[in-house]
Length: 91
Image 1: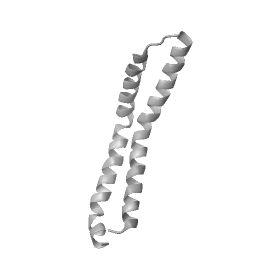
Image 2: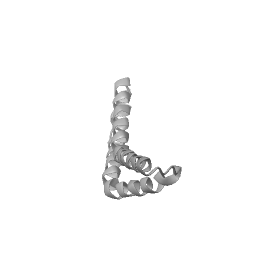
Image 3: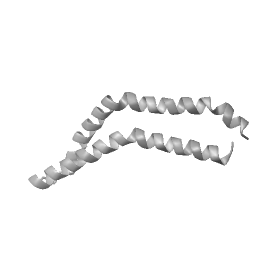
Image 4: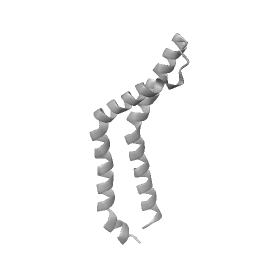
């Protein structure tokens, strides 16, 4: 397996990880920001207030985007498994 193939595989894996994690990270960021603004406006200084809304938002994202995320990961796995003969030949 040449260095170029390893770099291409690593680049593809990192890209799939970023694309798969992005919906959960973005919604967590938005919900955290909204809760922080709410806490600032109301002067509530409870540290644990953000956990339940973030948890619920992430569960909603998993319900809405879970199929898409699973398809991305399974497509990557299938591509890697189908490429094994090519990786072995390119020694």
